[in-house]
View (cartoon, rainbow, N blue to C red):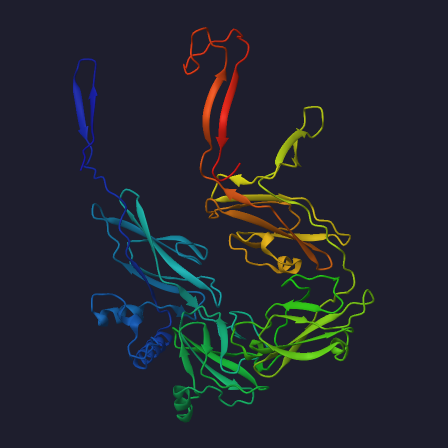
Length: 596
């Protein structure tokens, strides 16, 4: 505590003093608890009876016969807590009045001197009633309110101490009852999105929303055929159904997935859901139904050409067709999208079932996703040929997808470019030619290298391949296998043992660098480049190899060429020259162990 004193002193030095009452410095009060009281005693008694019934039958949904809400604290005094919960109304019919009480507000260093009360649609808000001073009262009934059915509001109490500091506390949410409650139930596994059909017969799902201002205690649901027959197959549902209570299953969340059902193809089912709110009132809603319909599997793209998942429009070969395709269906477990096998066919007319297989009829290829038709007699450059893939699912339904076709007979010789080990030189010039613009980089031919120091990096560049059909892309790879060991050119074309850098597609680029590779010293490595044209042909060019040389070169002698004064022997390390403008060096016997 502090005392304020004032002294008045005149010209003669006489003084008069006065003292104020003691003043205490304090902080804001501590918050208490705000409880909503019933304004309709009869309805409140019905709520209490409903809560007691819910607790008796396991209202918390855990099946133990206890309502966990009634013992939510840790003091073990469930009786007092039950009374508190019962008094704390969470929903009411009245739209004009709210009754509220509060306790527990305190100020350790001072006293509470007044309270003010407000009502809002958020905790602490005052949208429905501005702060209203109620003196030192600890309960009040607010009247002349304008609350809407279905609205949720909070009552806030503000406590002030003697120095004007305050603290606020809000009640739990109070729902203004609206009946009937707006509700919606959606069929399907996606929350909030309605499905009209599904193929699965062993699982079904639904989600729902009840716009109840009064808190929901729990939901109950059941699955029935559209003719009203119970479709749920659980033991509990069957027992309840025999007992005449309709086979309802309880749920705490606003969605359910039932994997215990055995649904009938072609039948239509609906979910019926009811919600019980804190006032013990039930709201019921049902879905519009979902049909169990086995469907053909989802299709996928089919590509012409020998490369997987890359389509071509022209090819050279007149006796072979290649095709590859993505996986049909999906991995959801839906029998409609579970593929049992694929069939492939080749034809010249994609618009009819006969036309898509007039070259080769459908044949089973099991679960393969690529196939080669060989030994054909295709008419060159006349019309495209198409490959069709038919996928059959677990319920025996099929989907057919046909490629966009490839026309044979458009082959051309591909002239490969020279492949060099190392990196090309880059030269720079001004973009505008007058020294004021940016720089353009141009690639110039560098000499091929035969050896390098790095054992973790390898680079190559090559001249463009040429073909009248145009180069579509390049592939490059690195191997320790020398191209000189192949006995015929076809073996070189078919080579695929790229143990250093796997074969990679590089679009139209003609320079590549591989980093973080592992190269051994004194071993030659070769860069293979494939150039593919628009007709699906390719040719190969290979570098002459590069060796990792990690040993420095050796030099027998390094000396200056200069004259010796008379009488001095050449073995002396000091020489003399008359020409001060130049020096001449002599290097004898320079050699390297692994490279030139």
